[in-house]
Amino acid sequence: MKTNTLIGDRKEGGLKMSEFESMNKALKASLVRRFNTEVDAPWKIIPNYMTRHPGGFKFLLSCSYKTKELNLNSIPCFYSEILNCWEMIKKIKAEINQEKTDPYDAIIWNNHDIKIATKPKFYESWHKAGVTKIKHLLHLNSGNLLTY
Image (cartoon, rainbow, N blue to C red):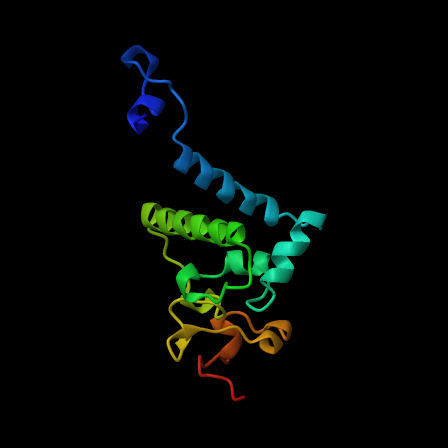
């Protein structure tokens, strides 16, 4: 059966089913909203544990990542697919809104624009110390980099 027959209108001989790939992506992306709640649900334990090396799943969702650049070999493909869908949605949203964000508010970790040796980085000790954004590395008045 062709896709047009499945998703086509009944008047034209179709079955009027939802297009599976789009529905699948939408359902996976909808999990992001559930992840961003403050409720510590048991189902969040596995993805947070599996993505602890880049800061945890919830933190990763707020980063400006590209999934293909992250080291996600140890996580189940379901969670990688959620990250892929969310990456796609954030990209489309940015194109539609043409958002102008403050570059000093950009999250440093897992950022596809900030790399060391061609890879985005995550330093857990810095993250735990509250260093997450570019503005956390700068003197407020002068804009110069802080010393280590």
